[in-house]
Length: 271
Image 1 (cartoon, one colour):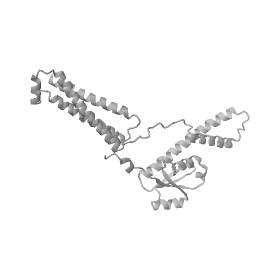
Image 2 (cartoon, rainbow, N blue to C red):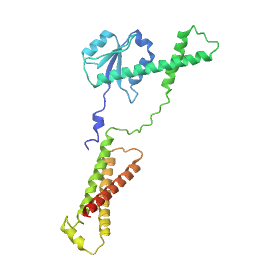
Image 3 (cartoon, rainbow, N blue to C red):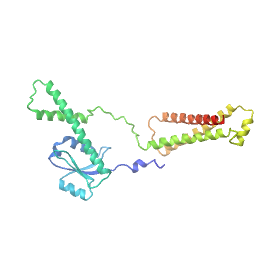
Image 4 (cartoon, rainbow, N blue to C red):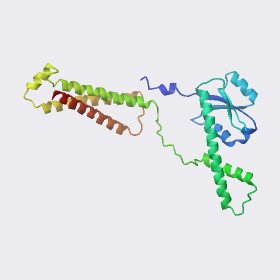
């Protein structure tokens, strides 16, 4: 119950950020496009609320805590201006660094494309390099938007950092279920209980007793684990993904192994 709604309570809020509107930002298509996507209100993964203002206005917004930081583009490198250390400030800085890395990659790809273009174009004018660079650079950006890297996100839609807590809960249930098997075996040992003494001198085959005790403890564990799955799936609405049947199968095998291990350990001690 404690982990059922933890992600919603810790959901990252939209970060207010400002970008100084100068000549550099007007000519930097990669930077503008990146923040356009990250600030799109229709984007489910929206990260920023971006304002384009003058540097004086950005300083005033930062002073009044209306933004977490502002970005100034220059000919050398972008600068991130903040007045405190925190999660929002770190995210802004990391985003800017990531955009710079992607921009450098795109430029390198553009240069390679230009080389190929020049080699394959017999009538190309090598003197008009700037116009050629701009043309190819624009094409590379368009390819990047279309998934030029051929990277496809196949991550599960229910990917969640809290899921490990529920998987651990299942494992803990299997572990504690082994206590049932241990208790059942203890009741068959002459040195552990009076019931064990009576069993030891009874004419019943010990193999049948061990098998029946193990089967009984396993059935009880099955009931317990099914209650756990029913509660977490239908009450807490935990999404175990598309392979729930394999998770249940693995859990059943895990419980069976636990029962067998306990029985082997206790029988070894008795011998």
